[in-house]
Image: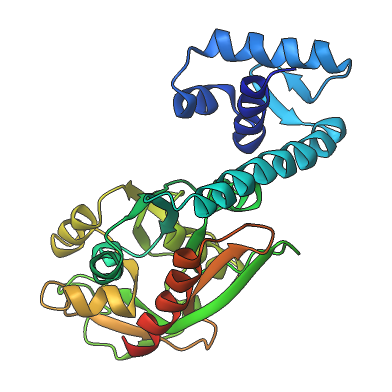
Length: 292
């Protein structure tokens, strides 16, 4: 059993998808499949259930993954501790932020105080990033999801309203507020399904008893704004994002239901080892949003 095999297993387990895991690891899909098969042969049990191209972590795999995550986290903690003992200049902090354009403003003042730091932005869906938190591959995650895990802490940072945005020629334009049930048949333009804000609004729509009729999904917020301005569909937007784009999207409609809000919070693993700088950065993030 080799460390590389375990790292590959950890990634496949996170995605439950060979192609996506191979893309992250930057290796050929057949090579990854063979590595996982050799690992299962070494252990003597299957770790995944396979049906055609689908692959799903089974009970054996879930138990093994828990121990693999612990092993890698212990190795990372050991590395960080000896680096601190030796006074290694470069301290790395891995962070994921679902808020658009916030990272430069958040990190720049801290880097001015601690120029020896190295920040790495990590991307992925909320489920993938949760796995990375638990595995020690991610230090901090700013998102609207308080993960249900005993190993993950979540500190609320701020709460904001969610609005409905319509084109200026839409029949709802000029309305101050609306009930969510009134728009269940509207044609929506939304961000793609891996976007955290989209995950949240889909969840809130489901709680309201409907699935948005999505006519178009985009990856770029600027493209979404352009389509709304051209009169193609309606969308949801957070209060902060609307304030930045209010000159382009004047038709903001408040949603009457009290749960249509987004609370952003800071997540981290209570099993992780943080350098002094990383602990200070955590406190700095909380203070930053208190003053924002």
